[in-house]
Image (cartoon, rainbow, N blue to C red):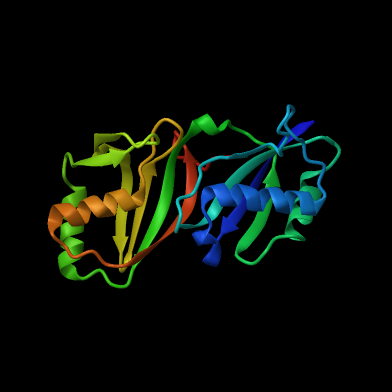
Length: 214
């Protein structure tokens, strides 16, 4: 028995599939692929799957990570990748299967690209002033629906603005996680800038040292 780490892209229409439904999709694809996957034991047996950092509804990603366990240690990573590629639907793309290097608790940051229809000079100036603040307090809803106040500025690791694209590297992981929509909602609330439409693409999952998570 061995653990393998699967890398895939979630694009296009798949961004409208929730994380819960995504687990169902992946379970069906794995079954269809015929790879020797390991099932949990007990009354309600199911495929062991662990998503490194669940993706928010409406976001696209080129760096999703999922761990599974295989019964057959001789079944190679290359065979696993080819089997998954043979059954993947449109807007899901499996592109790598590797041996896990670090546990998911070592995830520290996540990088996003937010693309707007337009970022004019007024909004660009307001964004730079916003990110330069020492503190910005907002309300965040926790997993159990409990609302708490958080300071988002220390959780923004890096930021940049290039044309109509904002790139944010935000704190991420099981212990703490900052959603880019919370950053933008807080920005609009604090500055009076009229909210505009934007898309979100996750481009990297990083460890606590800021290196690519493997």
